Length: 319
Image (tube, rainbow, N blue to C red; front, side):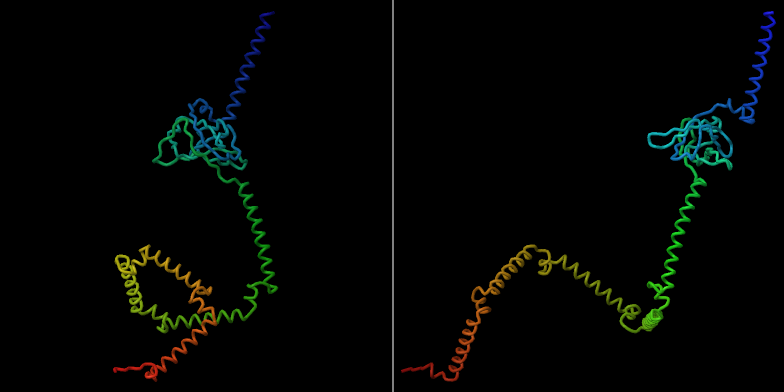
């Protein structure tokens, strides 16, 4: 009896094991759908740095040229406030990747599932090795485009509102633009200015006036060029000569002497203006000035009388 029960239990155990193995096989077949052999393919680790993973999850597929070559192993933040995504990819595909390859986060289908697409990189770049880290980037999502579109629509609405206000002001005759549109005098002034400019251009083309000669005659340009050349030569000679003018420019002692003389002259003029000294008295004292004028007149009269009557003042006797 005991052997019979033992035999039954053993049979149930075998049935359970068979059912469990079959269930695992069915599960693997459903999950991997023909890729079971890839579970046992050797894999290597590579990483990519992102600023935003856009909802990428661990286990998301990694593709290269449209072929799935691995999956995301982990997603962690770094000390530099970036996001490091570690990937497990087939060791036999790393030979096709380059160190300047890029890891793009893309959206799979309409459900929004994320996956990583690794670009081939440039031909001249070195090949990727296990443990390398490449640059990651994420594309603009539809949500971002919708938000940007909403901001653009809001800005466009504000612009339309402002434009409507401007048009209303123009319609009511307010502002410079409205006056320019409705006031005929502005048009007449603009028309007159245009005619005067046209006449000026015609006169310039006809060779009338000084400006036309400056534009059309080569002799005027030659004269100006010659004057400029002469000025340049004079400046060069002045700099290289030992003449008085060059000394006046370069000799500091002459400047100091001029400054000293100028100071003294200012002092003398200041004293004269204040009425100090004889010159100042002549300038400020009217009485002294009148006396001096009177004395000069008397002396002038005396000299005139001496010339007219010399015998009255000079007597000569030889005996």
